[in-house]
Length: 224
Image (tube, rainbow, N blue to C red; front, side):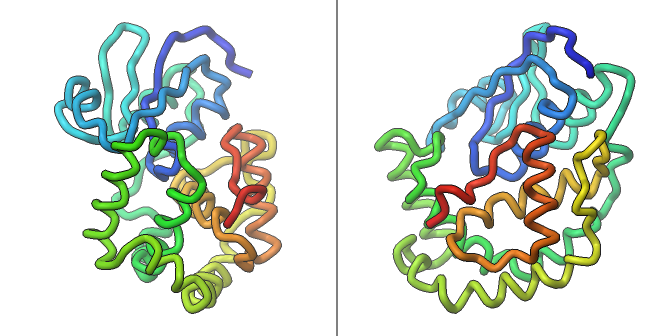
């Protein structure tokens, strides 16, 4: 197990799938990298570091910064000379699948991010920013989106069933992690915010194993 001390910081939102991609590698490689939660309305900090409001941002041990999740992962993956992630494809395997229900996904997840009081929403300004910006994205309020849960859940559950045969429930064991896992797991993790969402047992095992291996917790115990 790689345990070289490298003093780095990863600036993130807890609910951001892009951030989870990088958190996964940090956990798998046992890298000493602190997680720093930015507020949702904080444009100044990431802009100072990488020239734009974007997360994740990696502050390397030499004080320089790196943005964009796949580039951060490429850097982290090369630290020990034993890459796990593999080559980054032009089109991730699950991208088209996710795009087919991205609207429904957002309507389910965004209201719950506020209800679960994500670290990036832990200020009045951040919460106000999130409420306003998500209304523009969704075309409705967070409360209106939350009220659609019963009609949205069957759509999502149908999509989850489509990929049940594709995933390895043992992913994460013995460092058995592929590129596709860095795309899929973060998306599935956010859906664990939804109470009583019907995950196929194979996907539940997949998520729980990867959560343990990467040290990125699921939301199952606090789902709403």
